[in-house]
Image (cartoon, rainbow, N blue to C red; front, side, top):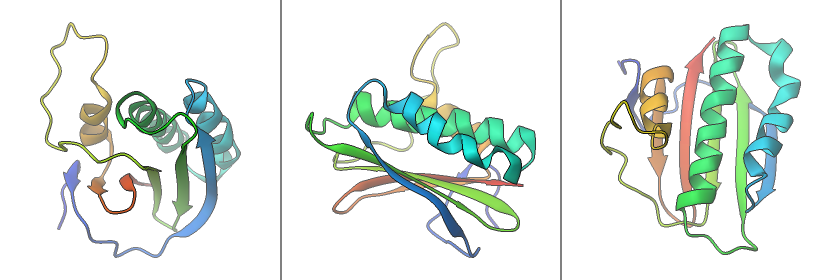
Length: 140
């Protein structure tokens, strides 16, 4: 059993993809991701939708700021729903990162993305291969 905030590579739930878009490697990508996800608001409880938007925004922002991908590269975001959860995947051509990371100091104004994912997502993880994929799931 995976506890809230734990990482896992298991995908036991059947998800149906609802959104699958490529975003330009630009500072406007997080806003474009939020706009793309807006159509799902009526498909889940309001608190799940708000957490999904926040965490997706954080992952896209991290990808743009820290992945080191080429300016012409894109960041992919995929959202899938099941009857019990929402799953978000953000992928880029970067080389990955240290998933453990340190908890940011309360005075820090940045560096909170992974901490928020660990706190708000029910499951999350990252996978490296041809693309770096960071994903999370929130139970509905």
